Image (cartoon, rainbow, N blue to C red):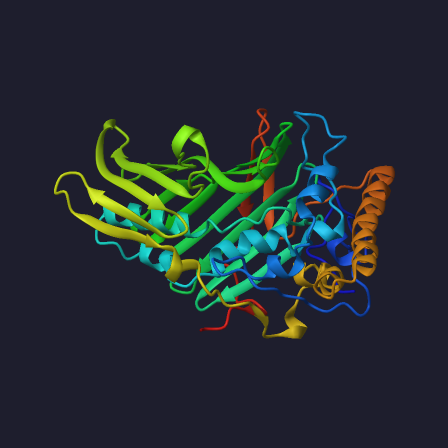
Length: 413
């Protein structure tokens, strides 16, 4: 097993520190078997296909049975799903795919806008592109502490790390070779059971930095709403705010379900919003309307001109699966390695093997946490610094200025 990180005594978190002269191991590394291989699966896209292959005939009944003994209002962030309900990928991979798996390069367009309004609307389009079709009845693996995911697409390099396990905090840092764009995310999912539904809010700060313009955009994330009754469904909902203090411009997007006659049926993938100046939010500059899985239009209120802001088919349709370019360069903590045996078994529908492999990963993580607690040892992330304020809010900062090219790449289509 390779040495992990810098030699230091650590001050907060949850994994083994290294003693003098000995390499430290994080939970993610310790879960690996000697025969571990990296397994990468198709990203969630409009065309999908992976979920249909895994979906059992009685999925709805099985999902409902999972929550039979769960009380309304319960926090599900530590809820352990059986392997039969898992997508063959980690939550870190899902976060990353929203950035590096895309058809249209909306992120590069953010840094080429001729004025602040064009750049803000480009960030809005990019934000919508990170919205991927959710799948009822399936969820990714909960990342183990110290797990990482490192992928490059063209000149963009993306690095994620699970920087806390209780609560589950994921950090993301992405930079491009041209020094045009930098992404900084600190995400904390908070799923709660409400009796007839589960609502997962994503807390934390997401920033898009356009370095040549000295502009920083704060970007929220929509909530994921899983309805169990009366009709099972899963959809994005809630209000997303995108603000740039440097330009004074702000956008507000509402993800919602439209209703048909008597409030039944309707379309779950509607989006509506506006662009305005922070100093006068009542004065709308642009109106946004459409469906995040089809097209979204932008209307200039002053001129009345309407244009296509976002086209889902070109942005998230037929997405390319990442692949390993440099096997030797893979970190032992790479998500695709840590969960490789579990994913292989799920893809083969060998549920007994998948359950055993998943249990090994989770049991090892719990064992190491127990050992740390008994020894009074603590852990800090390798790639990020981490803090929590008195209100419980978390923030992450990358230790390195830029992200290096990754051993996993998204091939050009």
